[in-house]
Amino acid sequence: MDTATLKGKSTMDKKIVSISSKRQITIPQKFFAALGFTDEAECIVRGNELIIRPASRNTGGEFAEQILADLIKQGLSGDELLLRFKEKQAQVRPAVEAVIAKAEDAANGMGEYYSYDDVFGNEEE
Image (cartoon, rainbow, N blue to C red; front, side):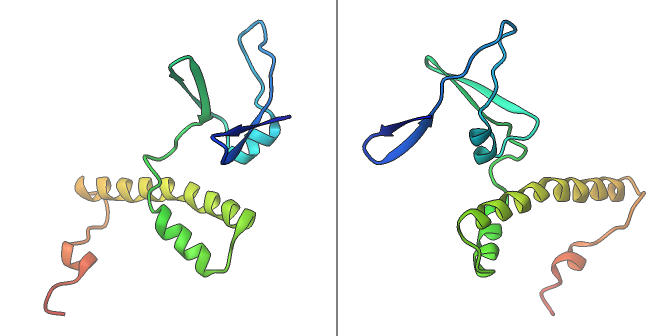
């Protein structure tokens, strides 16, 4: 694997990969794992470059700051912090989808209903 310097500050791993007759490539395992790929990739054309990155499953890191703060308070750092962050981040979307489904059920009269005061309390308390 080659390493190239970017602007004298950071390094970039580089590897030449083959393209099959069906226009397929294999993402090197080191890159696949380090970037958190799962079963989908996002392809973006920027100028004369093709960027391949893990498909976004969320819209911008919902709750990322809170998740990181909690994991740091637990004393995590380095690779363990990164691993646990990815695990926790992956749980956000399903949890939000479950809340939305419950809200839709409540709006359709088929589920539990919570008032604004139930959720946030009232000013007199």
